[in-house]
Image (cartoon, rainbow, N blue to C red; front, side):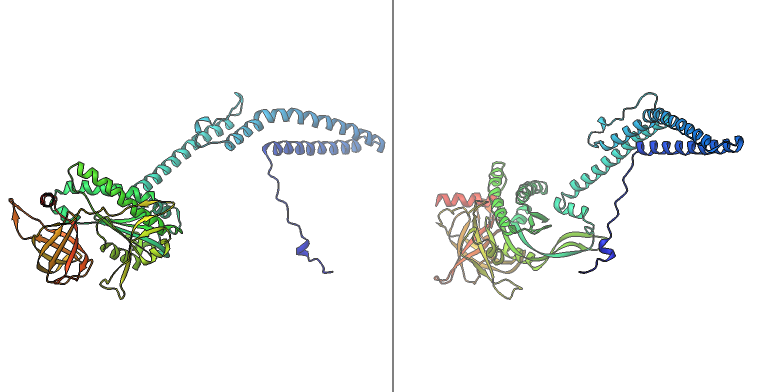
Length: 481
């Protein structure tokens, strides 16, 4: 049988019991009286023995009488002192302690310590000082809470409230650097907003943009997205920060469809107010990024860095107004929940392989959202001469190219011209005539289809921006035709 070692048999020491003022005072008084009485007893016996030369029996009976007297004195002192100490010191101090235990900082007005009129002035000063200290602490706490809420409310308008909480509450919240995680990036952008700005007052454009951004922000927050930044009329939104969730891709797709639905309702208000309707394209992609504080000690920005952001922007650039395009990685995670059209494949500058994206128009439970492009009006045969310039981003890279419309409606032009254009190419159009004292402004469109059965090929263009006056005149011709 193995021997038990000393460490295995040693029992842990019990912690000392906390003593209250009642035990300390009464025990202290009792032992001190007892020591004094024992000193008096010994002194009396020794003195009698030395002065009277008493026998042992006399000394014993003398000691017994002294002990009985000591017991009576101790009992009397303890009873009388206990009542005195309890009333004057113990009970007032216990009342202070009980008041501290039941203190409710949310209702300081109910905090009071009942004291008798004849309590010592020092105890009254303790209670008075306690009240002043509590008031000071509560004032400081309230000021600190107001300051924290002010910081969160203020910076929550520039950053997501979640991000502000993480920065303020985490010890590493302000350190430069980041962590790697998988997120879903949603990039939305208005079609033709820059050109719309050129024809209207800046104040009016700010009001239109603010109404649009306010509506989109509410939708994004409803789907638990984090707005990384507003880039003019574009919105960069991230799903998966500060914490990654399994349903980030699905929530991003549902948010995009909800944003398109919201914009459709907002456009009805714009038209009723005499303002031009807006069109928005949305691109979504999922992938790894670095999330955290970027910059330097002097200037820091909380954001994300990774190829997924650039890819989401490229996907969005291939959208037409009212469309939601989803990248391959996102589609692989949500394909069981969404309804999508056949994938689009486009070769983008700077990429070694074609970019594949899926036009999504519906998502199932628990979101149950659907948004499809409005069914276009029938195409009407109208021949209008025009010139066309090919765009790369905001830059004109080729043109002008002469052409002519074959058919058109409010949103679609069927055009033929001699040059070759790839699908999803952005173009600028200009009708080369003036009618009824009206000259057309620049029209922006995207090539959505090429019919090579004709020579030269016939291109279908989706209009992304047209001046409202041009649109009114063109619609009048369409109705007349």
